[in-house]
Length: 423
Picture 1 (cartoon, rainbow, N blue to C red):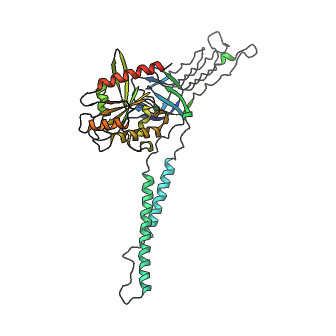
Picture 2 (picture 1 turned 120 degrees about the vertical axis):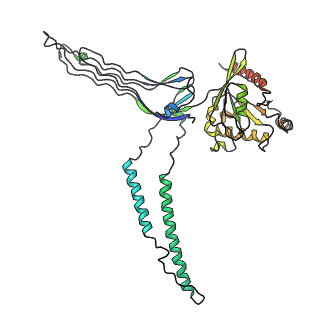
Picture 3 (picture 1 turned 180 degrees about the vertical axis):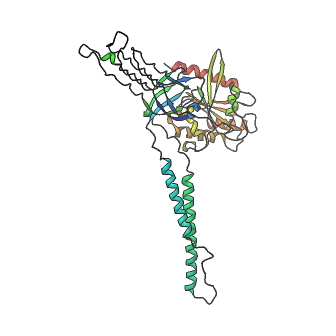
């Protein structure tokens, strides 16, 4: 299971209390104060690491607690300070500070509510009149219309009570089997850190400082102070961590367009490839060797379908992973093996990207015409170039490795151009 968004609660360690003690040794019955200071608590720190690819470690351990500092002791002994809790996260992790979730109900309240629902259901069942106990009048041609009306009224009453029981039981079952709510979309203003570089750190919760011992409060007028200070509490809060993959180019296309096969041909990555839709269930990143000791990265996300901007399919949940990509590669099935026209696929993909984020649609892009070895691919390519003469189209066959070098050459040119434009 790929996890790219997780909610955590972090709390830094509390500082140790100061000590109030006095020197007591042989032949020194009235020594002065010698209480030591308390140690500092540990901070909670997140560190960007290239060895992490997802947030699974924090998903299974969402409560982070740093150790507290040790209290001070006599003879001016300083309490031991706790070590900082340093947790590795993937490069490209965004950190949002969010309000605490609503307090969940206690188990006693849920049990009492469930027992009340069972009692209501039992009373509703007991109030139903069995069909066998209802004495229905005989119906014949000589009976009056009044007796026919009373018969229909009795049957309608039995059906209404039965439907009431079914609705009550359905409500109980639906509420008891209600799924867990998903994490809401974070507010961009709540962003506190972006760990975009390897080794970058962010102090999630700052440690508490240790208290001072009574040795700091002695003076010429107060030679036996009994005053000391307690350690301060460490910071705590709720945070939402969201992973956004960092890559130079992002592969965008319909399911079964050949994105994973292309990533295999370009890099040493081994994403899953199969003949059914949505084989890519989570983003994959591959490192591409462009020659002359130049390397770049390409991200492959699950396939998009029409309506992805309205949360249809799998691609909407992972479109955030190409938000960092300065270049987009639209992979099209030029053979139309799925029964769709390639130019219609491009228009739908462009529209879904624009509906998701207009900034993403404004970035430079080109078209990768895949599956050129299939029938009708050459004819569709000519028709596509006539419809879109201004677009850059690279015809390839990812499965056979044809056209891969042209893509690498094109990516090298774009990488050089973007590096020149960057300050």
